[in-house]
Image 1 (cartoon, rainbow, N blue to C red):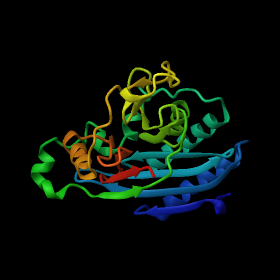
Image 2: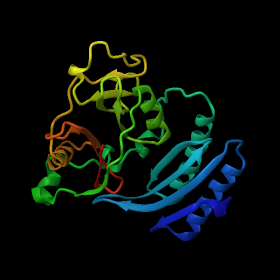
Image 3: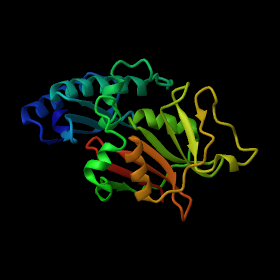
Image 4: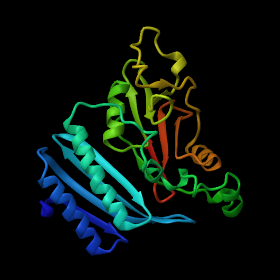
Length: 264
């Protein structure tokens, strides 16, 4: 099984990378689920104040795409968390889906991007004063997928399976670009480009699973979105393109720079 695992290590000792690959292979070999297309990535990431190790595994479990990301200051600890996270993900995919609790997870703070954690969150004004307005972090990666048309409940399942901060999709009941993310009393929240203009007879979302953000997505340029994220120390921002009205999702990567998802 180890030979079938595509491994990438950036700034991480090769012996540790081989150990993580072996442990992932042993885990997959011992499960009854069909696990294919395994890709494991380990990389050191750092910002102005911290240096950490990011571990990620992508796979197909019984035909369903899954992703697990774990972050820790110690590379070996990050590997331990990755293997345990993959074990849990395989078990989740094999069973009937249930909403994932998020407020009682002891390891939750460590799984968030560094810039959203209280111990390393940059000051709202201090960063801009040090770096200057023209030095805002660049958008390091732009994804332009064909957005999936699916019900919000289906989008939530993808959010969990792929370890996303937020998931951008198109809601067929409203024909609006929307996003689901972890927040609110139920643990999941739904936001749309223009919720007030949804058709009155559109099927309702599952209120026991999702809370609805009543505000429309702000209309911003990409630069304005980056600026707002920096000023507010946000880890992700859902907004609408000023010219097309299409939804966009800006998110902060583990290296502190930004990624952008804009549907086509």
